[in-house]
Length: 433
Image (cartoon, rainbow, N blue to C red):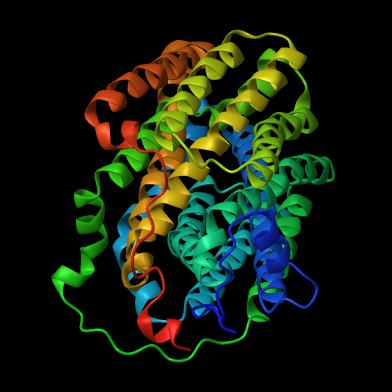
């Protein structure tokens, strides 16, 4: 099988269907396992890189604003290349696009490692390399998302999304802790570790069979913006993306964790790795639960509640001066965020026709990049003005207000009971294959 073509469908979406899907002789097993290995490795590498870059930049500048600028440097290429990435993903092999994206990220991480080995401390050059890394992310995230629906039958896709999210969050648990441990031996060791783990992801994706050449698609402005047009007309999808974007934009405080680790909790780089791992631990636990008990009813309301819980837990994190309470609050933010992400990702992938899934995934990734990377910039700026604690408190409160606004602005999301499946989740020629 290929990264773009499913084989025979599995009709049962329940536990029996999932068991059949991952049976030892299943035609899906090998490809899905390799995909999950690649997703785990890439996520772990990104987290190792995040811990190392955050601590390294803070050591060089001693400024929360510079920490926020790391997020901005990641966001700018994502925003500038999102539509081009979507077009490429729908025009070319999604597997090959993903390989190219991870290769760019590995090269950028290797460049930062080289600077650290030489002891240059050139913040300007580091930020250029971070932007190159962000350019790879612009293609990686939508390509990774667009591949998954073609690896499993549509009927069991809502169950596979939490499993994929759980694997990702497992990497986010281990990655920061590993990054903190590696940093003890020096910044170069941590950066080279990120490169090594990225190579594992590359190998796993490279081992997937090549897809047959895609039919050439005429390039036009209408085709270029088709992902935006689809989201604009699909209110529930637009509402889920917007809610998740603004919730994490205001509520996310990952960029400020070095400040809490060094200046408030005084736990050092190893403690920073633990703090970064805590949200992922909550997300992994929620993902495990959702794999066995998928959201099948009232999914819209549950997403709204999850984002509100995320905001409340963020406030607790901001006011806490106790390491156990801080970790508990971060675990709660991760669990709530996992529910939100699963609803958004499942809705976007199942409601989108296969032919434009890359372009829609690219726009979705742009929103995600806005909430994560640009949100880090917002956190850095507000921390510079109001302090780290004040920044987190403002963000958590704003998140709760965003939920109230979204409930009124997007009634289709609030009233959504079940996921909607696109009639051509797989193209007709693939159904006949």
